[in-house]
Image 1 (spheres, rainbow, N blue to C red):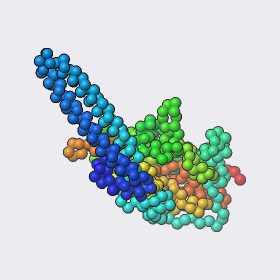
Image 2: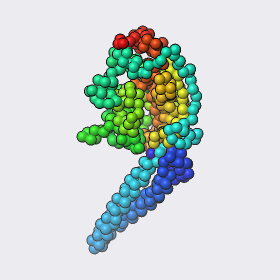
Image 3: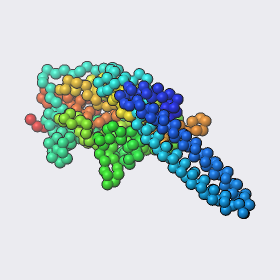
Image 4: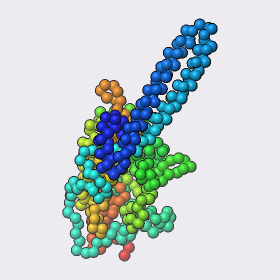
Length: 421
């Protein structure tokens, strides 16, 4: 949720952000009008309530012979107060509803436009070259006995898989390597719930344009999370927290996505599946520290990809591809040789105070008042990383060299050998 004061005092800033996102600019004027009506209805209610309080004192002090008539007037006034309160509540709800349709104001420098309008920040590492025809990750995974899509489909349907043997070990190795990285950077490890209440899912901003990608259990009124960001954001909901030092959490969870908007895309292998594992960094911090913290999250992600020997690029995501909660997002995309393209492995978002306002997460200022914290998130490892790792480090015979940094997490294993021909 955006800051109502920013809306009231600098509506042009919000309008520029909406335009850059490709979202409705008119909704800003709608919100301003709703805010005007809200404040007017609250004022009317408070005036009537003050009148009621004063009239109550008059009734109490009135002679007995006058009370009957005054009590009747007091009852009439009480009815008007009740109506005014209902009107104020309705106006408050209407304003809140409109405000929730406005995305987080983007940070200066974020490019305008959609998915293809990103700005390249940097490219790191040389793209792998081969003196043989490289295999894609699924063919390699089948040779290694690591990925079984056919039985995943048999048991659960399309876009489900089994990671087996060295595939299961490989995912756990990447996740544990990331967890050690996070703990070393001061993050508290968390195993998070994967089912959350609607108010938590709504609070993090995931029930907007992409709500159709979320699994919902109507009998329980719970949502399956597509990232532990949701549960980590909800962890301190309705609390006043101390962020003198940032609160840093690393959430390990299984994630679920319907991928409703990706029909026909990436149907081969494990690039885009309905269920996967992920280690997510999440930070609560002072708003003025958010951009510096964002840079740190990006640094941790890059260090992971470099340690795994992956060629990658960092892009500054365009406003229209941010999602409603992020004010800025950096995607880190690894080179996938058989696709001759960079593919997103991880991203990190600065959500400023947007989620905290929705979830009522505050810190106490020096003046003693409370104010919303800033929240940030970034993925440090996920199942998809196996795709780039297998393809980048493959050899002609179908074996795969394990990056040195990953070997301790695989019991010292340095080569993944084919078990099927």
